[in-house]
Length: 148
Image 1: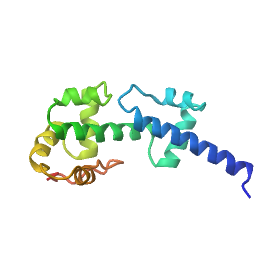
Image 2: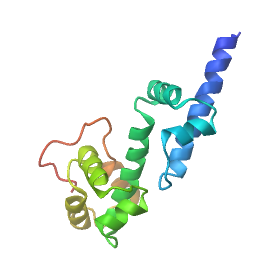
Image 3: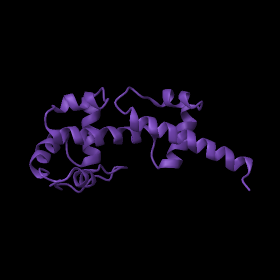
């Protein structure tokens, strides 16, 4: 038999899932923790704490990972510049985008774009997505690692 505490926790987890789903869907929109929290009637601090407990990282970190994943796809396509990709995925600062990309992927976006065009040609998209998925929580691949 579920207690009131269990039910409250389940309701909160459902709200956190709504926040995560919105970040997955609207990653290119200008999202911030305050706006996300308001949408689910939580304070920004409470949302940040509970999101980290539930998903292992802050809402900002999760959102940036989504943006970097999308940026990787656009960079592999090769028809946009790094700056265009940065703006396309919702990042306003090229410096922040490049730093976070390098942190997660292990190489700057310009290097990734160049290597991806040569090393992943002809592979099925499912394989490419699996092999190139960014690593979370500052666990970039070792220095000198190649994506090919």
